[in-house]
Length: 146
Image 1 (cartoon, rainbow, N blue to C red):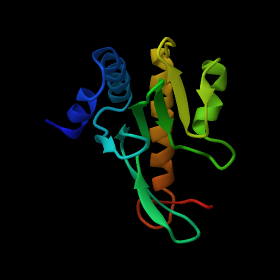
Image 2 (image 1 turned 90 degrees about the vertical axis):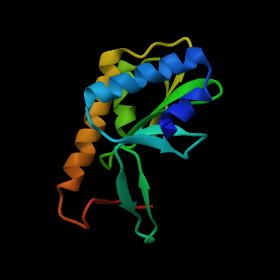
Image 3 (image 1 turned 60 degrees about the horizontal axis):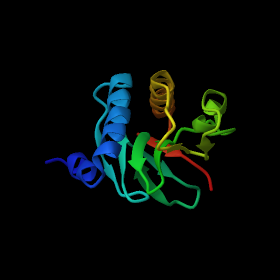
Image 4 (image 1 turned 120 degrees about the vertical axis):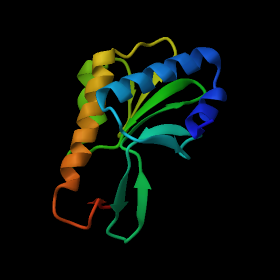
């Protein structure tokens, strides 16, 4: 059993269906993107990965887009930002009434996310990271600032 399957087994059947639907849409949007469970906020099924380095020289690795289960809601993460705003913030008009943070969208149990919105968020997130990787700097590393 994979780490993703083990993670899903810890979630109620109703919530598993919802997370599996999010996963299916992410995989439809960007087929073949590697996935794994990331130890972030109790666990996130994250897709793709990138390395980042702060000016302080701190380095780490993180996922490009992901979905997780929380006690009161589901969460969708997109870690893409263009220096002016995070990608999730640009989706406010397409997700009215949702709680949107810098890199996350909280989805209450009774709220539906339109499939086309999640597919678009996924494709834009991954396209951002792929374009950043093509810029000249340390291989496969984003330069971020604190």
